[in-house]
Length: 314
Ligand code: NAD
View (tube, rainbow, N blue to C red):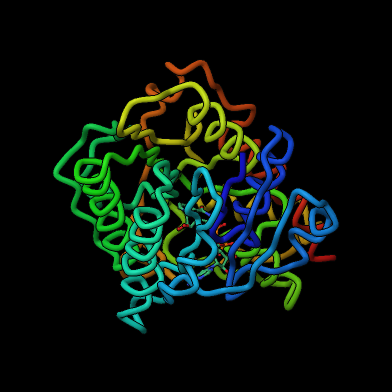
């Protein structure tokens, strides 16, 4: 069975490739290396079951070609930077919504019927109850990134309804871990590397979100994909609790040995426009499939800090 992984040279994609290979799949990766890197999949590139194609999903001609002889598509490629939407307003539209359309249309033409999609907790917007269940609605995202995820979900379910596709849509919490290339922990370590006397934290530090370790994330995807078989399978993926940005800053300062660094907050309830200060997904539905996480939010944070200190080199 050959799986296509879009964004397979990215942070989560590279772990998913490992998991797919472990499960016996042949894997074709398409990635434009905009935020991903061959370094993340170097260990797989000599594997005859892994094929890497450098290409951009915004070109439907490119996507049509990579879709040949594929049985399912794990669609992970996207602009990962929510903040970018405040400066360039068509990035998420092109890299998110249009790219998803190109994938679905190429699948339809090539008679590939199964899509697994990396969506996000941000589709729920900021007034959702916590923990947020999958059936919460209406979903009212407040970032351009969130809008592109919700639009992509809509396109996917419409291809299910119209063309007999089958979909697994996963709304991720914050995913962290080994090979991380962006996000709050990555930023904090880099800031301390530049100046070990102070750590600037965007917002008041009270932002509180749930964090899921990346191997938990890809293992839960594979578990649900291989055991749940409805036409549309919608699951939140996260952990049992939350961790505040303040606590993350303390852990980073402690683990980097920069205990004299002063933690300075820029103030305000959120890091940037479009940020959601408090988020926690209900994971009851995921748990009901028999998958449980190995890390809670704080242990995932500490584990990630240790991995990234080693990778970044402090
Ligand atoms: P990432 O940036 O490491 O991975 C995205 C990959 O997609 C990169 O390798 C990038 O080069 C590639 N890519 C981007 N645009 C492309 C295009 N037009 N054509 C081909 N390749 C392209 O990010 P990640 O954290 O691994 O995220 C993976 C997916 O999970 C994304 O869809 C992201 O929105 C979603 N997600 C991530 C998180 C998280 O906390 N990391 C949370 C919710 C959802």
